[in-house]
Image (tube, rainbow, N blue to C red):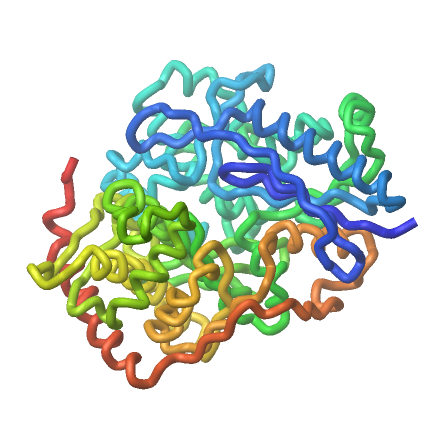
Length: 499
């Protein structure tokens, strides 16, 4: 029978179950989608029961496909989104739905949280800046806003912990998700006790921390229901596993992603912390670190443009992918958008400034500018924010002359060129649509003894595109980036309390 590897990625909008062969070539992919719950401004939640149901369906799909194709699943390894939070009562029943990374209801306490983080030196301990997306801020909100519910809570878990406990009966969390929760000390790999007194917690409120290569077993109930009789591998977070799936564990290359949001990440063999707190640092597993930074405003800026400003008549009335429309606009505009500056903070700022009050701004608009210029300036603005993180990481880990890229923006050839020109680096876009699932499969292979180490496999992916920086354009973007930063800093005081 064929030996098959399975990575299961629990994302913001879907559970993706991906099957690979022993050379990590993708053979099959299943997707079970779900919707965010609409609970009002600054809130973003998922129904954990629905996500669990789609996880079970993904396991069933993998088992059936393997059987149909005369294959043997060696394991199912888990990837999951970071920064989620669920409150459970003493019977481990749900008290809340799952707050995800995009839930920023705690931003009203940003100033107070910043003071607490500074007082206890929490960034240097945890690698996580004070920000509303992290679970400590979310728990602070519950403590202040819903104290009765908060008092009833006995366990505080991530979405993955909830799923793993139901599947296996084990209350465990991997080092990656624990570090991205903001509660873990990167240096001694233990929960930070400062939070216990601040939030009236104890270590008993948290799960046991285990390495991502830990092997678990499905309980009898769900083994029978799914037909699966394979090991489960605890796995890691989706961002760290995306870097692993991109094949950068040995090369330590930068990986940049733009989907709905965006990020730049690079592996390290030590905690990488920034005196200016521009970046975060998480674990891949107990031995490998991942410094990086993320932006809220990636493809969602284009989604906003499409919803509010798109002009279908310019495409001849055809139904087209919006990236194709943007590509057409960029083909008819010049680099720099004729001096137009777009600050893309439609959903506040994460790295490097961590300012939840930041908001969007269009500067320099005049009668000669068109909608096409605005669209191009938005793309350039998003990429300028990616550059801000890249610059910070280079300060901390050393310079690089090339960056691997993935995510939806790799479907836009002009955007890739803009990225090369703004970063002034060679851009390489491998064909790897499910890098997090592949990273999970790689971690699973090591956990189950199919490989001795991550670097035993050399990925040779199909390259979608390679872009070199245009020497005629790079200086122009360098000047515009400096202007972009100055305009942002000059307007930050007016963004506070904007709602």
